Image 1 (cartoon, protein in one colour):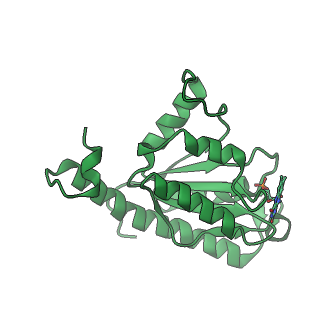
Image 2 (image 1 turned 45 degrees about the vertical axis):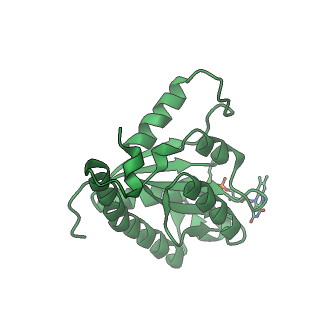
Length: 195
Ligand SMILES: Cc1cc2nc3c(=O)[nH]c(=O)nc-3n(C[C@H](O)[C@H](O)[C@H](O)COP(=O)(O)O)c2cc1C
């Protein structure tokens, strides 16, 4: 891949369902990222209902550590009423600046194409100044999975492609963000994130 930095890739699982297809696909995607040289972590999106007045919990601290650690993030959601899961939206509500400058890839488990779900995730991430992959992976669990494996070769290929592209473009974006944040140039997007 010609990669120079080891990219930290976080997977965020937005379904709480036992046997979740989006989680299975996310795990396969993270395994592929590892094969390509990335460091990977996986967390469940389940956090207490967001309350700006509430004290931080150990699970929130773990989630914050993981999001801060990540250079690129893969979000996996079920399609619930054409939307991302409430669990996932609640997770996103906790973060803002932590998403900035990072590249996001999307996996949706849907009986349709999951396009409205991906659009919503992209909108939320754009509001936080994160970058989004222009395409995602939509899986139809009962059709595309058997025995924990993806049996649809087109989906398998697309997932590998998305992970590969996430690593390559994620490195470019993260590298530039860090360089801009370190430089003294004022007229950059990253300048506002200097401490
Ligand atoms: C409350 C609810 C709403 C759902 N709405 C939709 C929907 O609008 N479109 C769709 O294709 N599937 C819908 N589904 C089906 C789920 O997207 C599907 O079961 C998916 O595999 C769930 O993701 P998971 O396997 O990662 O848990 C819905 C399921 C539930 C429980």
